[in-house]
Amino acid sequence: MTFGHFIAIVALLLIPLDFVHLAAEADLYEGSICRMKDGTFGFCKPHRECKWAWEGYKTRKLSYSDIVRCTFVDNIEIICCGDERPTGDDLTSTSTININRNNVDMIYFVSPGNENYLHEIDGESSKISTTSPSTRIETKSRKCEEACKKFIEKYQTLTYHILGGEETILGEFPHMVALGYPSQEVGTDEFLWNCGGSLIAEQYVLTAAHCTANPASRPTIVRLGKVTLKTNDDTATPQDIPISQIFNHPDYKRSRNYNDIAVIRLARPAEMNENVKPACLYTDLDDVSDNVPLIVTGWGSTSVERRERSGVLLKTNLTSVPLDRCNRTFSDLPPTRHLPNLLDEGQLCAFDVTRKNDACEGDSGGPLQRVNENGFATIIGVTSFGISCASSTPGVYARVSFYLDFIETNVWPDSR
Image (tube, rainbow, N blue to C red; front, side):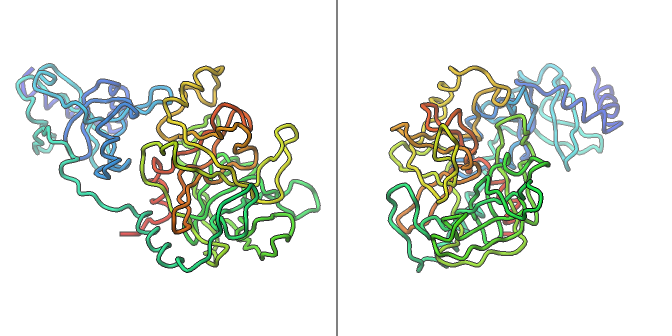
């Protein structure tokens, strides 16, 4: 094929753009050569198997927004991965390469003898580089980390209580939020507190998407600063704030248990006091060590048999379970349409080693957290689902560190 033929093929593929987009999706599959956002090349590979991406996340040289998606196979995300780089041998036969420029997908064919360059229709050349982008990206703190430092500095004089027992004390988890759903009973203006959440900024709450994505039953208000929801036994005056906007994760589907995370914007900022303050967000993608005590909080069911809701905020100590071990447990269970491909990297597991306590119905959306020496909670997971309450099968949580790009985009969009 002459270079003239090569240009003609490119021109044909670029018109119309809709055709190009469809062709790009059809031609990219696991093992395809692909182009990353920095202009270097890699191969399409399952996200969970791409060491280049995960090492980049851990060292903060990459974020999820730096990743180029090739396709999905069932519910498994295939990304452009830098673990291996295309060589001259890979490009000596005509190959398709996906290039994303200005959010337009384009397909280019690399002709034999011209494997070192991609010739674009405007005459500009882009030399193939084998340099990893991680060598050129500086480590920087995340927006949520900067916000956390401000929280600690601003609220460090508050009083915190020592953890212990099952019922919580007022002010022990001041980031804890209850989501209120309008009652379906005629003639009542009461709310059903069916899900929990975490205050992560003065005007934003983190929760589970399955608590907010049902158009027939969405929360309209949040309650902060309370341990008891139905009585005034805690003698605290609640802050009831309407919800102004809900951001469900764009890849969440109600028929699946993946990407089960959402951000709520309140109609006004919450008033900060010793009973109401934000929590920090965990940024490490690794599983938490099993010797680190984790705590789940919520107003969920207290009885496995009768599904009775608790009248007071409860806490339970849990232990982290490595994702691979958790997946082995779930692989022994009957397959379900809600979890067709077992757990993915956006999920984590935890359970009570005594098998007596667990997150349960009504705890959904609430935090799985650790509390540091300053008394500040760091949210590690968002309660998503479990097989049954207090069973030997670990509970599953949305992994907060995996979704930081989504969270930060909605909570701190203008932060520098």
